[in-house]
Length: 304
Image (tube, rainbow, N blue to C red):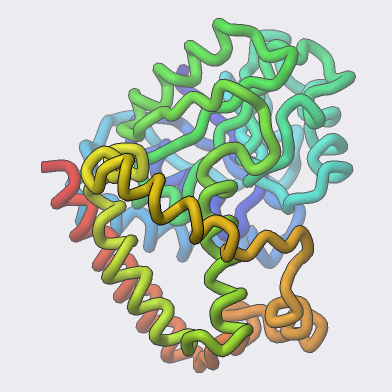
């Protein structure tokens, strides 16, 4: 595999491109938005700098080029990675177009955060070559990628993707059932639901909750995964605490007003200058630099 196309240059796209290029892959990227294409070179440069700080091996032959059309981007590609917004109709439209433009053997992957791959591949040409490749944000720093087979994905496509993820220096995690949200986001959103509920009910302030999670369970989970943590703490302890605590945990099926009200007001977080917390452009730049630096340091330690 020597050539890949990345379709979508929003939050994830530039980091994916930089990671692939670092691994010796020739990448052609495209976004329907001219604004996103204009921003891409600077974002690519930042991601490349982070990969250099991480000491990620540089394999010769890699490059990133920007295309001005989908057809140009996917021409001759061995792998196409779709990274457009999380709307099933949009993804199916893009996949149908890609299927018409690429060779029958081209692997087509979706970086969807949780839309079932079965729903995306249904009715597409050669659905056996369609697969989920869910990167974690930021994709050039977090080295885990979920590999998800839809109902019609061929076993050889899964095997190919596992090998490819290893080739680019990341860790493939195979999701054995195509459930919405896969695994990472199902776990993350269950944590987020409880966190939002605790803040909304006045149990704790947002700042203290972040400290509690980052320096409590987050600190431990970075080293000891949940299943290993069960053994470390003792299944008898989990059984005893879970027998009463599970009944108390938030189980709402909708999104809490704490979030929906802010969305209705246009308070979306860093992208709008305010959400739960307030942000200036200077603070945003400082936070991004600080978080990237800390994630790089943690990854180095975890790889020892």
